[in-house]
Length: 249
Image 1 (tube, rainbow, N blue to C red):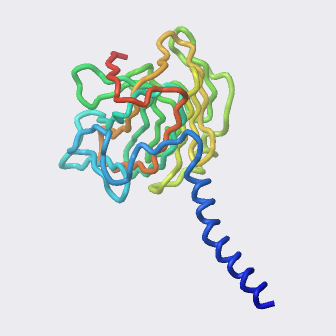
Image 2 (image 1 turned 135 degrees about the vertical axis):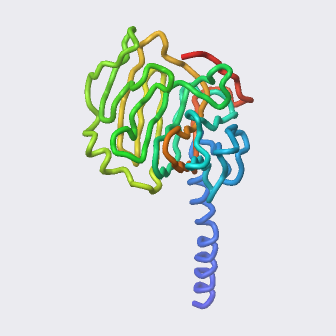
Image 3 (image 1 turned 60 degrees about the vertical axis):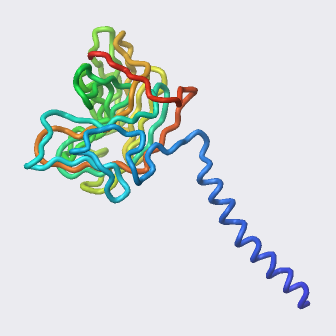
């Protein structure tokens, strides 16, 4: 009886040790996902140090009344281009407007200035989740819309992914929110806190197949924006050194 009890206790102790290891391995081995921000430094990130830093484990952009930015400024990921991919991150914004640039281009002769597709978000209640073309055709899908961009470069609403006010009700003010972007071929989908915000199919000749990834700090009133837990999953893309993509929109 005592021998049986001893064996049972040893088995339970072994299971207690092994089980966390198994669970940890399962969580950390999500297929294809890579972290592109270490939570401590701006390694592989390139932005104006007057505005960008790491604070509280997050990439932080801040403007003040004493130190405004003259135009929208960006911090660019120098880990390579993105083409077909998924991106997941958490953001928090206090005041102002910001966004996540993808398949984007660097504007010639203007350092830290980016154009291209943008997953928009703001401190207000209108634009979070839309697809915006920064220096690149303007709004391409308002929140709740399913659009197709024709050869004229203009979006046509062809359906709905949800009610804009209902989507906004799921977004936390001045707190952390989850942003998820999916770009496959010429189809783009955005999600905030698990709720789809737009779907856009770009059939215009100007549609971009690849480009840089960047984060935006908007010109205007003082604001703070933060990004953390930045993860990307790429489909058969270059993961080598960054490629300069310099093209006017």
